[in-house]
Length: 291
Image (cartoon, rainbow, N blue to C red; front, top):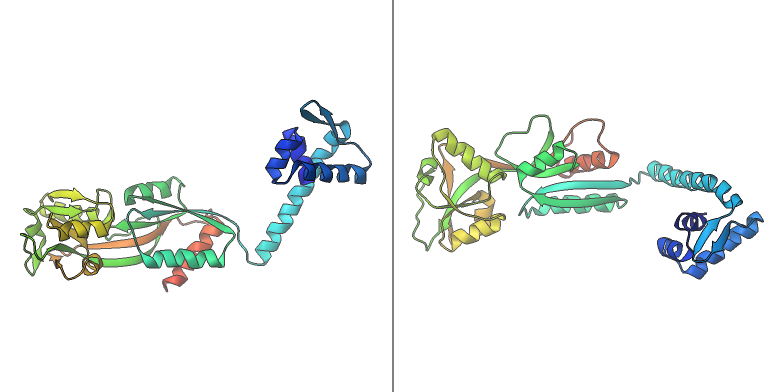
């Protein structure tokens, strides 16, 4: 029936064969078998075009209904077996190399192989806008420390920001290191509209100072590398500075302390798809935050 419908819609055996991924002789044999079983001719060849006979036209709606019913049976069996299907669009803040997030996605894929996952990187502000417009089912977003109103979240990372400079470079950092000390220093940071940059700019605005960002990089690792090469003072999460090695001198920023978060964010409500609901439930269990 599937081959019959392909020929009926394409009006050509060659195109129909390509569509259903079998040889032309194979699809011709299957259609011929259907005609013999029904005792009726279903197609008439006219040059390079194949047209339905009156009998062929009459059975097209019934064939479509039968194929649709078969698909529904398959979906219902999958549902009863707990085998979800669907497609998830997930956003992720640019330059993020969070191993636990990748591990969570991998574990979800192994559990629900019928769900396709599409992952797209962007800055946090655009990811949040995409969530609101329905472009993403959920997103991993960098935040300046405050949860987004109207959204549900799981906090994945919550850590302090530090100022970091090369130990062999000309810039020295004291302990404690106050936010006001950043005012006259050349800074290296993530781009605007990212969580780390927003946290820094918000804290500076409260003190009436303007951070002097001389270099930007979309990945935290590169921000640290630029500082290691003496090009300025990096403003990064504590873990990024620790991963950069002993050649980077890092001081926790205080007065005020600045924190940055990575959060998994999604819109609440019953309108969310079963696949999206399954992912958020899986994420809560993965990070031990069941509700």
